[in-house]
Length: 270
Image 1: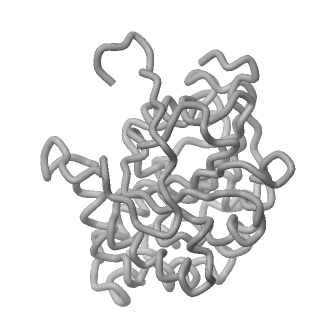
Image 2: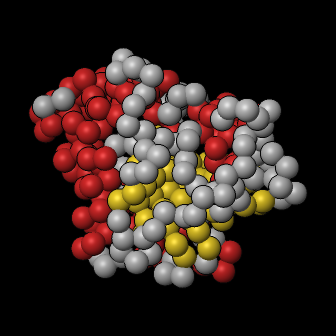
């Protein structure tokens, strides 16, 4: 955001529901070899298999985890604007729209093939009038300042580098006192989980990815990012250092997954 000592104010209108918006989308990164470019291409390759492998590899628990996220994301009086970041194939987006029929939901992701898979779900459920999809980098969202009551990201924040840029953008888009909910795998450092994590990340995830999608490297990348992700205390410190006012963590399934909930300052200062 050039020309400003702090994030520049933005006042653009919210994306319209019912169509895939590509204006201002991340068509070009600094290089095809950049982290963002590689991740964008990878998700494009595995988009057709993404939902199946999520459900298969989690034994269906991912559906429960997402439902908890959606339940905790309730906007004031069930109304307002909810933004789902790194929305992928829109599982969380659809759940949000169905649970909060008075709310508007915007799904943002930088992989067009993933969003296209999700748009089919939106149309199948007749939610086109309340769900907008936008092709956008989570660090540069085409959304106005203080325009969202709540923002969510499920299993996506670890793919954004640097994460602090995404936190800054979330704080810009959130209303004062708005909440940011991060659903992400735990660190696997607890003794009871260590053996399960080692088998899952070292063998099962890459093997299943290779057999089903034909892309072993994509699922090895996902395993590596899960392993490298900070534990709940370190992530809380990241969020607080970035400007969030309060942060707490809700462990799910014995800490296999954590739901992190951060609140933007109520006084509007960022």
